Image (tube, rainbow, N blue to C red; front, top):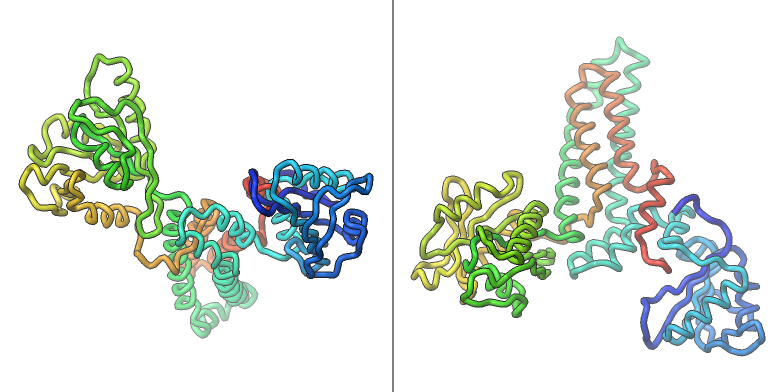
Length: 448
């Protein structure tokens, strides 16, 4: 986004398309005169006023509600106007054009939220939670985003930072009184307190890793020989006929994607072409794409026929699958094999026996995918984390653990504590470079 702008900004704050109501939002300094010119009247703060929004010729563009929030008691911390008119694209564009004519600049993505952050109305975690709440793909994600927006995650970070600052004061005090070093550390119980901090930061990191799943979900690729039931399993998981199912091997020629939610976790299920040697040009392209999808997967479900178990051809596919990606062998068609649904281990690898056609054993698959995802089933304590949050928390875990190991080297211990504190402070934006702010807010909606 670049350096933050000053002056008045305006944007349509409602989604594109037609609706009963559309909102144009304006933020800047001293907007009372702006509102009077636009409506011909002086609005009362925080009262909805029925107004005609006038063009430069005095002709009313639209009629709706005017809301005026004077600084600093507004979302951005500046004067804010919300013009609630009719939700047609043409009338909203006319109203926005009138605001620009009166001196406003067109707001960039996230610029309202960026001003709220810069004016101290939100910290960086809360600002990101605004976007996360808008983009939430499940009820669990929405609840987690709302908790972050209310400041819950920020308060946890602030408490950890305060504990680190207190420890830094105690540890660094020993640098001024080296002869008292051992007594100060013993008397103030630094080792125990630091151990508690390491445990608490690690716990928060784990909750954040689980919360990341609420944002991005788990990418699950169905792979295997032709005609083992990959498309049937996709349809069963999705609850509808997403993929064509026939007895003819090679029916699926391209990747078919479907997203489902299990306990609030988005699972992006990708059905791929059957993996085999073929002279069919189109099928070859599909198989190449299947391997590319496998490379990007979080987990691969390798389907085999329960009537035969793993054949040499299945084994050859398993050997080619990336070792770094979790693999679960799904023995499908257990109904035809006359076998019960079951979870079992073969040489340490999870096997699931199920029937995609009948639905038997699908609950076992759900449980296994949640296990792979690291989901505890207690979504109310997870943190809807972004990648930068995870990186900062990981750094704080590493540095605080190093400080623990270096208590006998007090200068090094003090430095590790400082680095742990700064890592945590970057999460809320206390120490954040301007270029990172631009990257974060540029991904927001225009109007937010």
